[in-house]
Image (cartoon, rainbow, N blue to C red; front, side, top):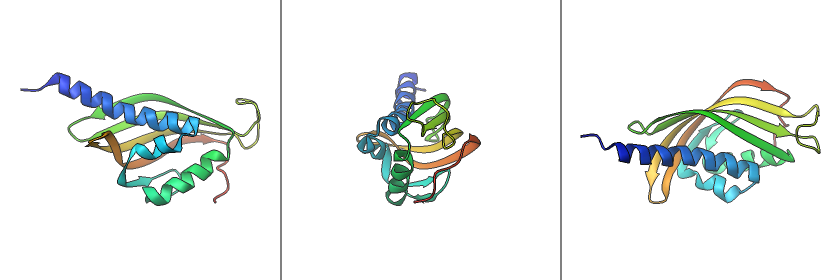
Length: 144
């Protein structure tokens, strides 16, 4: 017999890890961002494909170039049995002193996060992430 409450609770935990990631990025809470991933996670990002411990410093440097970011999460499709979540997002990266003001280096990305997730003692964590950029306006920052 299917335990619907258990499935709903797992879906909540899986969705929550993606929300914590986005909030951690936007608030520059790097401990929170790192805690969203397993120790052996692998990331196929929009610019690099690396194990988490090599990817994370690149991510942090790239994000900190912008005074303000805002990740808006949209559709999420969770498959608890497969341990997978697909999340649609729009990620705003503002170079202008006032967020939303025009600047030639502002970057806005329409992305899909394809995350394999695993349950841990501390909740669900991302073990593999593939980022698909569906569209982009503005330039990527220079590589570190």
